[in-house]
Image (cartoon, rainbow, N blue to C red; front, side):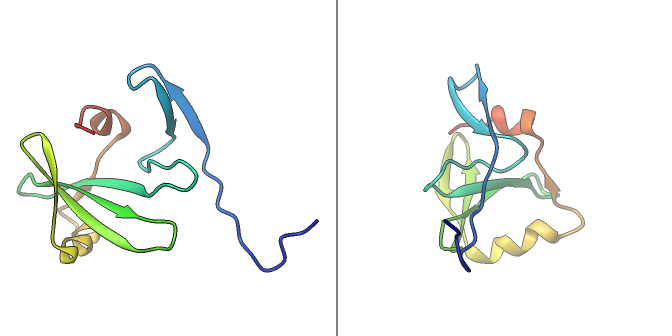
Length: 97
């Protein structure tokens, strides 16, 4: 039975002891049916995550102290700025959920 013109996105996940659950490899967090996130740090030190839901809608959240708060969608463009860095998996693991 084929999928026809439908596409299926598959993300490989691995178990980590730190969070006691399943985590995807790389800088994206994804579980089937749940949004995925990528994490960045600006030159000024602002940490933000870019979320994409299953339908491709984007949202931005800023890390303020130990809380994630909604940020302006325009910050999504900062992810491609030469002075913005993508966080490593180790850096992501140290962030609050």
